[in-house]
Amino acid sequence: MRKKQFKAESKKLLDMMINSIYTHKEIFLRELISNASDAMDKLYFKSLTDDTVGMKKEDFCIRIDLDKENRTITITDNGIGMTEEELEQNLGTIAKSGSSQFKNENETNSDVEIIGQFGVGFYSAFMVSDFVTVQSRAFGAAQGYVWSAAGIDGYTVEPCEKDTVGTIITLHIKPSTDQEDYDTFLEPYKISSLVKKYSDYIRYPIKMEMETSRPVEGKDGEYETVKELKTLNSMVPLWRKNKSEITDEEYNRFYTEKFYDFEPPAKVIHSKTEGQVTYDALLFIPKHAPFDFYSKDYEKGLQLYSSGVLIMDKCADLLPDCFSFVKGLVDSADLSLNISREVLQHDYQLKLIAKNLEKKIKSELEKMLKNERETYEEFYKAFGVQLKYGMYENYGEKKDLLKDLVLFVSSTDKKLTTLSEYVSRMKEDQKSIYYACGETVDKIDMLPQADAVKDKGYEILYLTDNVDEFCLKALMDYDGKNFINICADELDIASQDEKKTLEEENEKYKDLLDFLKTSIGDGVTAVRFTNKLKKHPACLSSEGGISAQMEKVLNAMPNDNKIKAEIVLEINDAHPIAKKLQTMFETDKDRTADYAKILYDQARLISGMPVENPAEFAQLVCNLML
Image 1 (tube, rainbow, N blue to C red):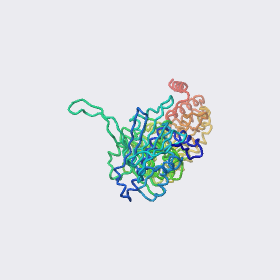
Image 2 (tube, helix red, strand yellow):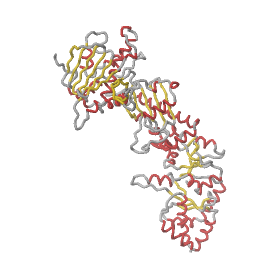
Image 3 (tube, helix red, strand yellow):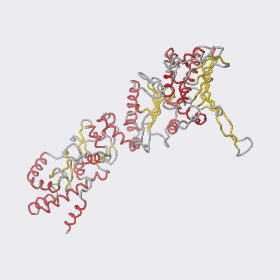
Image 4 (cartoon, rainbow, N blue to C red):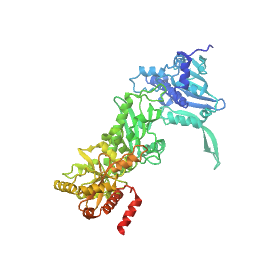
């Protein structure tokens, strides 16, 4: 028996195959099971036209046997087997793939679903074993052959006795080291979990002898441990069944078990797409956010399968960040995988699937919003902030995708409303969508400006999340209606005559207003009279693109460059305090200055902003009481 050398450019290439291509050593089992499945697919395909095969689909099976004492894992299949020449070609030549050739020859047949493409998966066995034997007998051949190798030093092929068609692969597991625990691969629970993780949906049963407890016949309360041959995999993926065949209970059980949630999802999205790329998708929208969802530790992504074999546990490229809450999976045989099948190559098919999923998720959320409003609002409490971040990030790239999914509290009934619903209720003469920001709905409702806007019959959107105003700024307008912050100087609800009267009054008392501004200091950029307040003496408004709320949010972020909004103190020209200031300015400028500071601090408090100098404010109030 002469040892042969691998037919590759160098032993270094094989060494790279074994030690570098695969990230996780446990992948070896997935690869060998996939090869076994391919072998059975080939024989099953042959049985469709050749009666001499004598096997039905239910006759095919993969068996795994563990021998802890001799440190071996044996994987047996009753597939098409390999001849001596095929052992040489498929195992002696690195990257020679019989599966790839078979797939190319039969690519028009829908019954062919071969997994292997590259011919390198077999060599992953050497990541965990120091010696591998492959006994195989091809269909139609009278003689079996055994291929054996101990890594990169070459291999042998010789005749062997084998009574049945198929292949037996035996791995001698390496001894454990301080760095690697190879013993774990000899434990039934470990092998069972790996089959469940990577190969649960292989179409043929994968069986292994497992220990189980059962009652002893005739002896109540006594149990004995026995070994039973158990099927480890589910075989038929739920997502490949027709939706009409699946109950809500089956969907819910699959979701809670697969994605470790304690309650059913809010929405199930099950679709099959054919065309430029063919894939099955089974997606779930959770009812609640995971504990780490809004943290940097959260990892988005869908499980990615190729013909029922798990390729990636979290494929982030299939979901935009705005829909990162979606759980589920995609199964496609059309994707271009890299040589190890562990990493997806960024290709056209992937982008096309991601684009289709994005549209599908949006469509299903819109249906939920329209037909299941209560369910949607519960979902929105958990993930609404994520949708709004999605509108704002990347310069509003996804704003048009999300604008009809976001909700804000309305001043009309203190309930959530869409932008579309707001616009449908606008008065005929209303040109803008009005909003206000604050910590809570109740605090916003008490803003001085809110009374004036509501008195005109205009509805206000109450924004309570930090991202809300940034979200609307990114959107800029909705259905041709621009957004107006009622606490900004751009608020314009006065008539032309009212505007003219106010302009004349501000000009008349310019010296007073300048004095008040100087008395307050850098806290404001200007002081002026306003006619947009009802009962309140004063309020704060902002000029320019940065509002007081945006200043607060931006400055709470870890950065060295602090943002400052241009704040204006507006005094109600119809309030007695305005007349008091006009009179006092002529007789007591010191007291006028104190009044200015008190009005400014009061306005800050009403606006939900902290008083800059609480001690001074308290003293000024006490002075008024003396």
